[in-house]
Length: 452
Ligand code: HEC
Ligand code: HEC
Ligand code: HEC
Ligand code: HEC
Image (cartoon, rainbow, N blue to C red; front, side, top):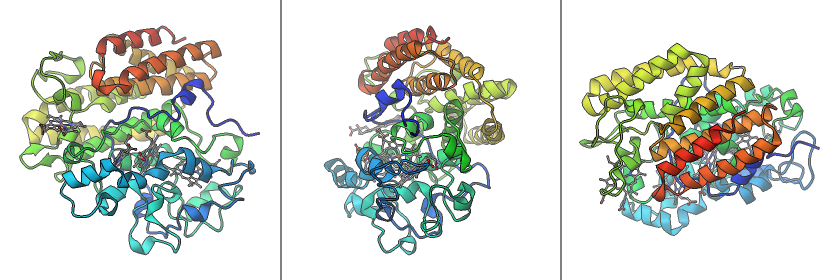
């Protein structure tokens, strides 16, 4: 028997829940020149999910050797990606398209299809390819033209990669892939105008979202034997956060995306800095925002804050510099384009140097514990007063506690308590309209007491 896919109660309880319905800003940015092209631009023919669904391939009723064989069934039944195109036909999408003044319906608009389907150019579509299948196998695994007939459950992963399969097992590549749609990249981006027209806010965290997709793979011995990267837990969380920040910085530096006429592009800012009742006097100074005073829109820095914790674990001095840069970025954004560019570029360089360090990070229980402690301590002190920060911290808490458990450093009994408290915290951040800072802080405190 293969290991069950969802091992810990906390990830199980998240599965199937419409999580934090909307959310954070993340986008694809390719830090290393060596990154492979994303599936959408891989130049290979995409054959469509129907070519993957054979009964001895990915819709098997019985477990196959090495893989479950039911990946297509999981995708079709439980994975929202298979519904991503259908969503473009619903009344919400009709309203968005109408509000934006599009002449075509949303399901014919290129920018919508870019994230809601496997929107490859016409010459990359095989005979059975259909846009209507939504975000399909090849949107994540790459065009299968050169590997469809060769890949089987024993072929070494490297041979599939050489034939153009996308390395979704590698955390940096996976983060680039997911964030390309869950935040946007230079080619596709959900602007404040699109959000204003009715598009939900987007939130993303690589480790938790990889589990709740739901995962149709399991990292076990045979997975490793085929030469796949077996990263899970804190490392995937950290790399996901770095890539999110990398993507925000790219958007800040991209003249096409950082402005909307005379205004800055508002989607890069903390939504709730503007969207809340005027009677609610919520402004407080906060260490991580430096000298930025009241009444100034604030960048959405939720992932920047998460990166600081991972940074501290591998390079304490670098992390201090990064924190100083973040303070500087906050004020530079509202004061000077020149300073903003300079600090953003400096931060990008720091992150590019950090990525290989995180990629080769040997994570042990002690490391997870210290990151978790620092994060929850700051949560207890009210550092995540903003909704977006609390949301990311709650996802981090889930990913890191789970990692402690998989490393054998958390008892079943404590895990149960953690899962229950994480549920409470998730419920607090799931209701964005009624987010209570006091409740979130109290929950962080109870979680902090559970770190063993
Ligand atoms: C950069 C990628 C991207 C672009 C561009 C994009 N979307 Fe989305 N869209 C998403 C993601 C990701 C979600 C899921 C958000 C979540 O739940 O976290 C989503 C969610 C939605 C939803 C809500 C779906 C649901 O199940 O409730 C609708 C409706 C929607 N998009 C319509 C559109 C339309 C219409 C367009 C074109 C104007 C568009 N989207 C452009 C990525 C994108
Ligand atoms: C949203 C992205 C996404 C979509 C869509 C997707 N996958 Fe995956 N899939 C992944 C990720 C991430 C992994 C884990 C990394 C890896 O093993 O490559 C994975 C792993 C797998 C594995 C490896 C299991 C193992 O033990 O080696 C198979 C097989 C698979 N997917 C088949 C499919 C099929 C078939 C479809 C379409 C029905 C599909 N995937 C759609 C992201 C996706
Ligand atoms: C080609 C674009 C695309 C890629 C690549 C992609 N996603 Fe998505 N994802 C979407 C869209 C669009 C939706 C919303 C679909 C809907 O609501 O019907 C979505 C929804 C989801 C959801 C459900 C969110 C919720 O609020 O319930 C999860 C989880 C998710 N994606 C995880 C991932 C992960 C993990 C990866 C990378 C392995 C990934 N996605 C890659 C476009 C994409
Ligand atoms: C700098 C301030 C500011 C920030 C930051 C900001 N918005 Fe807005 N938003 C506005 C303004 C101004 C409007 C237009 C209000 C109107 O038309 O009455 C608006 C309108 C909207 C609307 C349309 C509301 C309606 O009445 O139809 C939505 C939805 C929205 N914003 C979502 C977001 C999201 C999501 C974010 C974060 C990603 C965000 N906003 C960030 C200022 C902001």
